[in-house]
Amino acid sequence: MKALDPGLARSALGVSQSRIRELADIAMSMPGVLRLYFGESNLPTPQFIKDAAIRALEEGYTFYTENAGLPSLRAAIARKYAEIHGVGLDPASRIAVTASGVQALNVSIRTILDPGDEAIVFTPAWPNGSAIVGMCSARALQIPHSLVDGRYAIDFDALEAALSPRTRLLLYTSPSNPLGWVATGADQDR
Image (cartoon, rainbow, N blue to C red; front, side, top):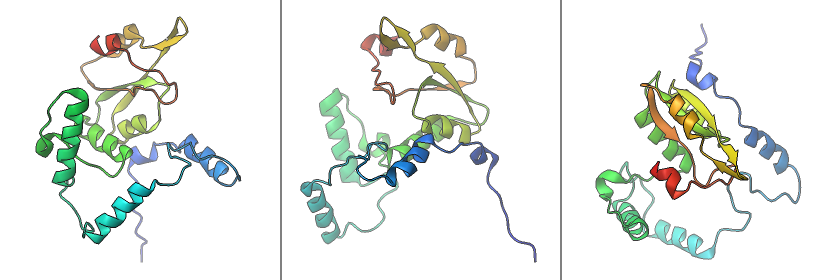
């Protein structure tokens, strides 16, 4: 009888192992290391969060929700977003709740890119964005930040030179991980 071996998609095989995970695996075996490498606090979960989780379990929030998340949570997110940014969003059509930031990034990128498309990524950058681009069979074009007067900056000339008809996405994080660079208002306006 032939063994079933479906193999992995070529796009998945091209994703290299995370150096962060590699270093974290080493650090986890070392006593006294503060676990800041995953963006995870080394402090215990605050009591009010534990209490809210217990209350949710006791109130029966133990089943699947709507695909985009609980309507009450999406409405609360819309209110907070409007409070912070002064922009109203329809929670039913403009807000989706995911299980993690990586899942949100994955879903977002996959809704934009098709095979053969290009995404421009400011670097150095957290590697997950470029990995997801690659898993879409798209190409991540890396544009390094330049150092200008002791501050990291966007190289707009390199950005404009990288634009092509296949460019569908500009991927950057502000504040940047790992640089700490923050896009200025002028950067965003340009």
